[in-house]
Image (cartoon, rainbow, N blue to C red; front, side):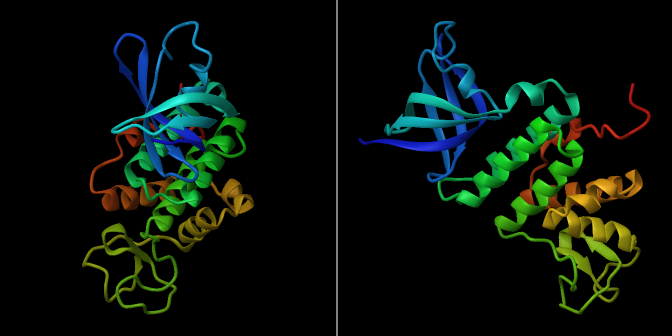
Length: 247
């Protein structure tokens, strides 16, 4: 059974025995990996802090029958401390890694890994509003997984836009003929913000008023959770730091 190396971002961990831990990670070349980190919970462990959620590491692993074994770990991105120090960053990061865990498998692409690492890096640096980083990540990772929302033509009949109905269950924007009766309308400014989030046009995203970002977040959340079939539990705890009523 061979030894191999890969870069990986840590998604979650579980205790195993008295000193070990099972680490679930998304790697660059081998998709999602579950591995045992032996002795990692001891204070004398050389790489315990490198195998915490939101951390990115260069790993050497031994391929086991059911779970691989972590042999070495070198830090590539220490994002955990800066993320954990801010509640809004922490909750957004949790929603991101939960989504990555749900969407990825052994066949996950390098693009999924790079997208998650880029999102966690942006969160740790406070480059943009955490909720906007999360929304952009959700839209892009859904697209990479084959569920890109329609943001111009009708998702049902391909009629060219502009349209004013966004129905997550139908695949995104739909025309008036395809929209169910009583469907709420979405403003063109909110739709433009969704496109900016998808394309990473951060000047437009950062300049958007709170009402538009909140409306876009609601659409993104509903769309992602519908296509994942089960809710993203971490989204219930995500906080938008731009709200003025936070105390």
